Length: 353
Image 1 (cartoon, rainbow, N blue to C red):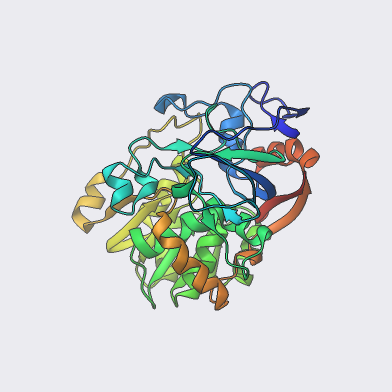
Image 2 (image 1 turned 90 degrees about the horizontal axis):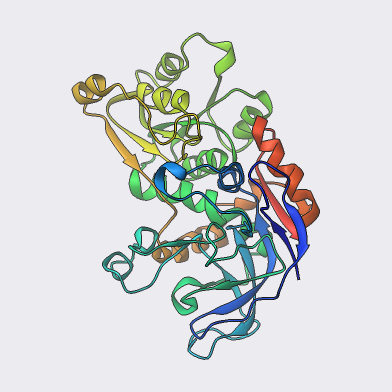
């Protein structure tokens, strides 16, 4: 089968013929119908995350935002059959640890990141295996198509969990979104859908225009103002209730925190680059005196999928609006490279393998 393989960090992925996966007893093999190309794939391609012991090794098949059809079923799998339409979270849980048993598989003690480690080849391929398939595969309702699910796969569900669960966003709240890539635009759309007032912050007018289309009530181009955080605070009448760093660089993180009003909540979604290497200086005195909350958000618990699917069926949420261009597997190397300069708008999705 064909796959896009990481041969050297920073060098174009290689489109290769590789061996078709055989399922272990607890696994299924899923034939990929669609897969998003995410900034986390870019981080892996760049060789980031060595500072947390998670640098992706050469030879890895990337891709962690898939939707597809079960093609082969391991002998111990009980709930899945060939032909089932499924989504697969990027954080593969073991189903047995305390966090998994509490319905928080995104915090699994032995989490295996799909497409980011050798024991979990990813979905930049015609097919990929899924460990603990009974636990990790989510059956897709007929109303959610594969491209839409690929748009959901990492960035949209991460934004939903960040706002609905970690920030407890309420109707009428002001929320600033710093960085309008795929996850940032997803956050804009989710915030608008729940009746909040999203303010989009970025350096590119095309991304800010897309944010307006998705419900942003105000936009701030960082290159046009002297102090982006103060600009956001003024637009929100003194500070936002929630603010998100959807990029993961020092500037966006600090601006996000400084955008907040008293008792505001900062939610960190973006992971850092090699420049920050996981460490960012924060305005802790201001955070203390304003009682600012700093919260991390990683993926989304599997238990939240049904609610998300219901909102999609009702058209309250429309992740297809975040999808940018549809790609072939051969387009992936160039698409990853374009993320160096933040050129992608929305979520690119591979639909031809």
